[in-house]
Length: 173
Image 1 (spheres, rainbow, N blue to C red):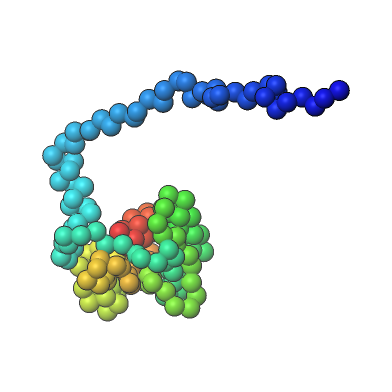
Image 2 (image 1 turned 180 degrees about the vertical axis):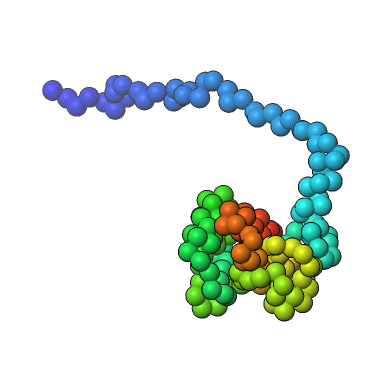
């Protein structure tokens, strides 16, 4: 018996089946219209400060971790509140994570009587129960901040925690 010539073997398919026979739709980008008042409010928050000068740019922390150090004595409830606020922030943030520090920090946090705030930060604006001040370089990179929370007896723990919830995220802007 003689060998089978190669040209008598079954041939391979000339083209692969098209598994992508259904075309993929092109996404449609729908521009949204933003109310002028809303846009103005957004720009005020992003480019301006509650106090002090406004900027033409957005400030932000360049490092992925921002260390927070409590500089004063603090009660357990305020410490737990700070941990909760930091955890909430970290869960929402895609750019920076807050962490507690006991030696060296990016953000100094003071629980002190409001009457002493101006000795901690000379730029303090009087009669605020919570206050923060941040410093940035010419590129808009934040490099240090401080937060002051009034710890007078007439401030409830719930109010004090609310102040931490306000001031800490603002110091991250």
